[in-house]
Image (cartoon, rainbow, N blue to C red; front, side, top):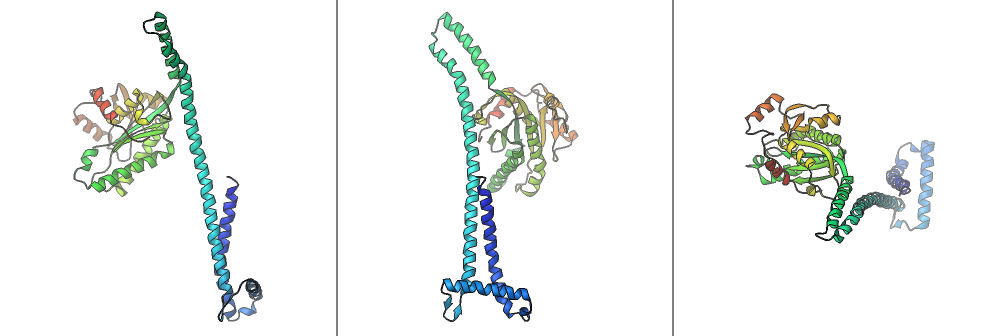
Amino acid sequence: MLLLKPVVLLLRLGSVTALLVLPMMLAIALLPVLEGAGSYPWVNRVVGFDASIMASVRSVVPTQLGRLDIARALVMLAAFLVAGGLDIASDRLSALTSTSKSGLQRRLEKLRKSEQKARRQASLAPIEAKLERLKPGDKKSRTELVRLMVQAKRELDAMTEDVAFLALDVVESTNMKLGEDAAFVENDFREFKTMVESAIAKQRPLKSAWTPDGAMICFDSLERAVKAAQAMLRQLPDFNANTRMMGTPFRVRCGVNAGAVQYDPTTPMEEMSDNVIDVAGHMQKYAEPDTIFVADDLVERKKVRRGFMPAGTEVDGYPVSVWRGPSADPPSVARAQISNEPGTAGSASAGAILGDQEKVAGES
């Protein structure tokens, strides 16, 4: 397909050249009527060359329409048709090149995922076969079962990967919608999702699950997850100023966590379940508006300290660091708001936090 690119370039160059013939033919037709034009040698050469072309056309096709000579009009029509044909051909070849490349990338990605799944199934298949042969109540079977459980655990542990999760949620989204036009609500939350996806795209998210007003997004590193959240919060003021139609500005809480999980690229985000994901959701739940909450030890260990400050609180027993977006409240205001709210991160029930997390469902 690389060979098609020079061909496409040549076709487009030919199309432009053919289009240039149109004004040139008109200009040459006007030269003889310009006063004193014949005194310029180059004009005489151009007119002579034009006359020879017109004579060639007249020798090939009939050009007399009554008393009118249409040789020049036929040349211009031919140039126009050639330019159009070359332009269409270049567009189709260009589309073919693009389609072939994207199609190949999709097939490679599908093949990669299917190979990963096949390897995992193959590694567990012998264990499953042995389990089927075990006899209930047999001491030897029980010993073999324990051995197989240990083997299966090792196989599953080998499938773990270090990934990171970004949980985000629109603050007071229900109250934002009260009294608003339904069309404005639908448009604003659709545009918000588009803004988030655009902001995080550079960090290459692995998969995501969306609710109408929040998301859980997986990245291959803590650094990418943090950068994605920061990019989104930096774009939020512009979104509120120039895109939002509802009366209440969007404010977003972000929580990030990272760790080893059993990761399968073919498993949708909403079907993944791990404590690492739960903690990301809890960090988001107790984050201040337009901020990012991350466990302090992760910030230190992964060296993403820049811009983070101690939040002065804990979530799930982890001291928290906070990064404040451009539209976040000053720390003193945020602390005052938190102190006026009933309960703290440490006193919230795990069931309540997980209940919030379980509502995350959607697209991967």
